[in-house]
Length: 237
Image (cartoon, rainbow, N blue to C red):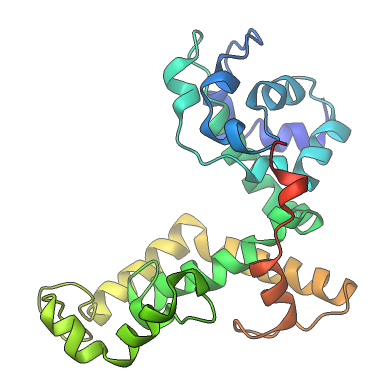
């Protein structure tokens, strides 16, 4: 038993997630992510049970803990009521706290999630706001999306949206008091600390890779972690 395992074992999600694993592989058989990625929740459950810090560190440094969609299908099928998805949650938390997430391609993508979704929630109250979904960031939307953006007032009015206005309706302006409450929730639950750690360790990695990180979505490091995805490495052949 070592330092990393002790930290992992102090997380209630880890404690609740692995009580009596018999290594049967049912979790892998039912896992949607295992259908697509080189991902095996049974193996991860097996590895953390070694209590070996060197093994756990490899998980924290690797891509595999970021493949899980946290759907908890594993929990519904496990004959012993284990939940590898909760083990993954604990591993992800520890990976961010230790800064080891920046050592893998998928781990580095936490910066894009923080700046794309996390900051959007705090700024607008929406995970992804209409104003943020520009064609350069979401090319899969296609040229029609640019037309919608250029004609937003007319188009959104026709579909009943209350764009950037007060009162009920889609894409309405979220009241400042509600945004302030969101900020407090993030602060109390440790979300802001997570954001700070993601930025802190990403800055360190960007310096190591000799890339500009900036503070927004235009830096070379951000664009790399947002766009680079090694399909051959991550997906099943």
